[in-house]
Image (tube, rainbow, N blue to C red; front, side):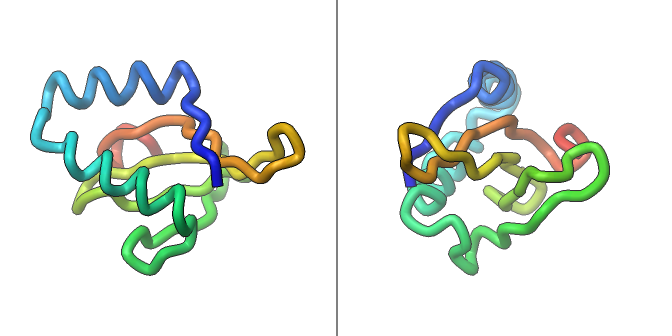
Length: 91
């Protein structure tokens, strides 16, 4: 699937990496895996409920999550990256 980066995701990742540059490799590896197989066991992909219903989340590190939606873009299923951050920041 194709990854589509939202402005919110872009801002959140820049903020996160400014505070914690060590997460750069984890985020990059997670995005590569997400693009290949959104439901790969390592990602622990799960549906969200409540305010984030309709969205999905996956784990990029112990306390690091990426929130996304699966959308149709140009007749192709794509992954819209919504935000990234610690568990408390994104939920």
